[in-house]
Amino acid sequence: MDNDNTILSAATCEACIQVVKNYQNAVDGLNKKVDGMLNSLAADSYIGDASDGYMEFYRNKVVPVVKDNLYGDESLTKGIINTLDNIKKVLLDETDPAMGKANREI
Image (cartoon, rainbow, N blue to C red; front, side, top):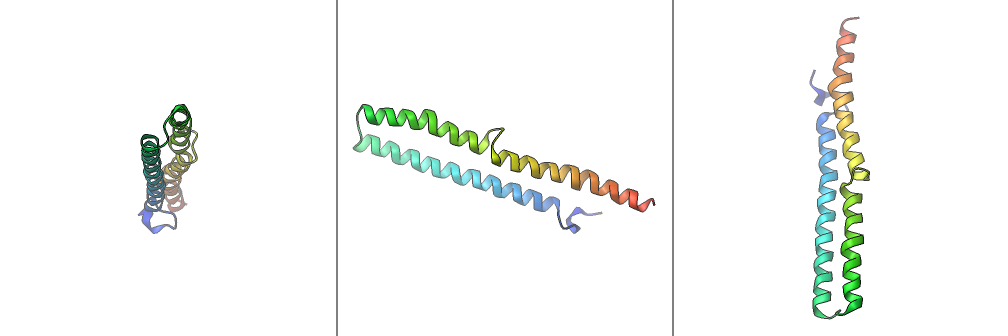
């Protein structure tokens, strides 16, 4: 039986995973813009120890936290992707065909 005929399909799971990956890419793009603006600001008019300290804080504290929350093993995005992968694998690829077979053998 073709899983695309069910209400929940592998294609739906894969499309949802792609939405999460698009979100990750969008956040990456925004982070690059912010980084570029900060570099510009620091190079043009915000110079000195305070500037250096802020840039160090941003690069060593903010950026790693954002990346970890976006891609880390405990991140929401990673959890969503894993959940969708598991739904596809366990429910659609294993359970549904097994139940279909069992129902046919009754």
